Length: 131
Image (cartoon, rainbow, N blue to C red; front, side):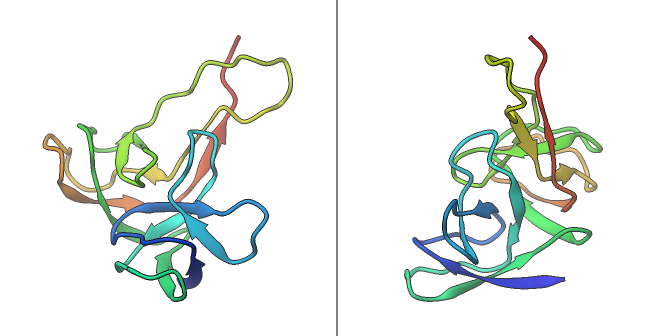
């Protein structure tokens, strides 16, 4: 299903976005590894007063990649919303703090070149690293 979200800044197509903490129905690029992704943008918006369509959970979405990822591997996002290999971040606390999140698996062919657009299954998840 495609959802419409408000934007705070320019966002590009085919990027992972997460909800802006403290603001309803507004998305941004994930500011850090624990930011829970809500989906992948379908269009580019260049203003701060519009909305952007986002493919959500259970959808197949095209994603712009910034690193090599193997088919079937879980995909994380960098702070520009680009796909990168998912890794569980080191846990530096004894609390239940989330240390990293992913958008879902790469279901298209392996990505070997930065700038490739490939298909992921939007199925976000989280992990708490081990100490």
